[in-house]
Image 1 (cartoon, rainbow, N blue to C red):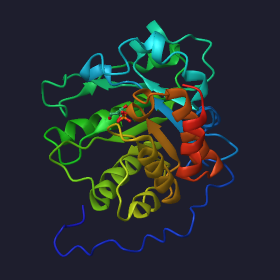
Image 2: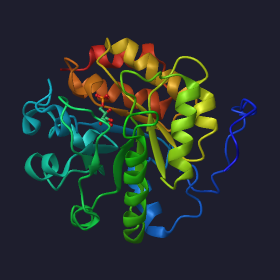
Image 3: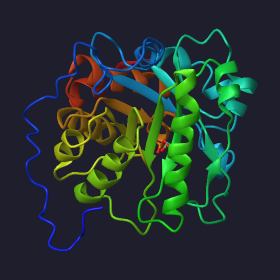
Image 4: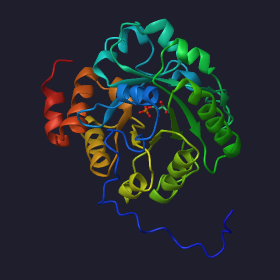
Length: 291
Ligand code: 5RP
C-alpha cells in the first residue's frame, strides 16, 4: 500500500473528456458478460444511456415513511413510469405486481433501525433469492469514515463476489452520516473505493462544487441520490446540475413520492435526465400535469 505521507492532491480529472465506454451505453461495462450487460440495459436506457430510478426502500430502517404508508396505493401505480425501481424484497413481493415493466434493483443490506448506529449493517439478502426475483442489480451501502466502515466495505465485496456468478451487477451506495461532509473530496473517495472494489454502479449525493470531478474519477456510472424533500423546482435544478456534471441518472425517492403529484414529478425528472430539458421546462411539465 502506498504510504500516505506527502500525498499530492489529485487534480487531473479531465472532466471535459468523456470516458470511452467501448460501444456499450453503460460506462465501464464494455468488457462485462452478456447477462450482466443485459441487466444493466434493463436499468439504463439505450437511447440516452441514463436512468431514472425510483427509490422506495426507506422502510428497511425507518418503517412506514411519509408517502410510503401504503406501497400498494402510492408506489404500485408509479413503477411502470420509472426506468428502474429500488426496493426491498418484502416491498416487492407484497406490493408490486410481477407484471411491472421496469428494471429492478433490490436492497441487499440491513440490520440497524433508525434508532441505532446505521453503519452497523450486514448483508440481508441471499443471491439465490435475488435470482428468484429476477433482479437486475443489488444495492449495498458503504460508510466511508463511519463507525463500521470496514464491515460495510466487506459487505460490498462479499455481495459483488456472490452476485457475479449469477451475472448480477452491484450498486454501491455512498452512505453519508450526519457527521460526514458531502463535499467532492469525500464523494470522490467513497465512489472510487466502490468502483475499484468491483461494483458496476455507484449511487452518491450531489455536491454543489466540483461534482464533475466525482463522476470523472469514477470509472463506472454515478447515479445521483435524491435526499430530503425539496420544492419541486429545486429538486429538478439539482437533477439538471448533476446530469450536466456527468451523472448517469438519478435515484430519487422522497422528492418523487412525497410530491403532491408524484407521477408528474417523475415525468419531469425523466425530461431532465433523458431529454435534456431545463429544470424550468420540466417544472412546467410537472405543474401542468394532472395530479
Ligand atoms: C439510502 C438509499 C435510499 O434508497 C435512498 O437514498 C432514498 O432515497 P431519497 O433519499 O431520494 O428519498 O439508498 O442509502
